[in-house]
Amino acid sequence: MAREFGAPPVIFPSGGNPTVATGGNIQQRRVPTAPFQPSRPSNSGIPFMSFDIGSSATNTAGPIGGGTGPIGGATNFDEEEPLLDELGIHPDQIWKKTKSILNPFRVNPTFHKDSDLSGPIFLYLSFCLFQLLAGKIQFGVILGWIVVSSIFLYIVFNMLAGRNGNLDLHTCTSVIGYCLLPVVILSAVSLFVPQNGAIRYGVAGVFVIWATRACTNLMVAVADGGEEHRGLIAYACFLIYTLFSLLVIF
Figure 1 (spheres, rainbow, N blue to C red):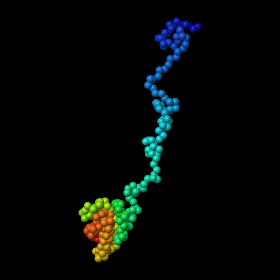
Figure 2: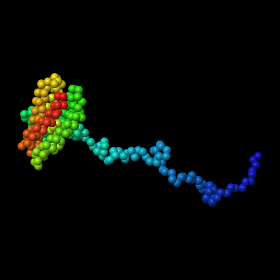
Figure 3: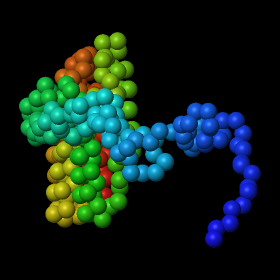
Figure 4: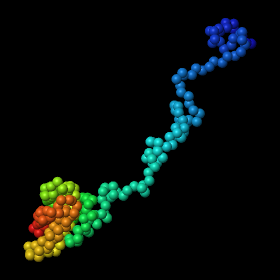
């Protein structure tokens, strides 16, 4: 037999009683949410992620910089210049200038109007290589004499030409370097010529005259004001290439 206990009714504060006698409707309590909790997208599987990765990737389809190419713009490598042309090295022009020195009686000065130092550097390295094969390490000596001879001939020519002279140091160095070709050939021939003989001195004299004639003709042709002083310019060139030949002979 069930026993009934007389318990007093529980009275809740105003607004918190789930059952109100006057209304008769059941009011459910709402779970409060955090005021600063960001909204989470339904398609995001990463917790605490408040933005959509897919939309961000779609908006940044182009490269950084707004271009259409691989690096901020369309790049066509077929239109790029060759590496040697960008460095200022033209092998065909070097070959034409070198070939013009091979004929000492008819030197073409038109190729030497546009001076460069690529060919002289190549001839300088060739000269040093043949000297190294002969057992002589003269890299610094040859380079120093090229610099000194270029400054020497530049000063001599402009003093002789006066105000009419328009020879610059770059052109002078280029001409002296290209006219070094006979001395380079002499250094290659001297490897097969007996030491301390009359033949060796005779061959060296021929190559010195060859280089002197070529250098004199070019110096007079590429610059103004040197025609009337051809003899003195030839003497200066003769001194320069004689010293180069002495490096080969001794």
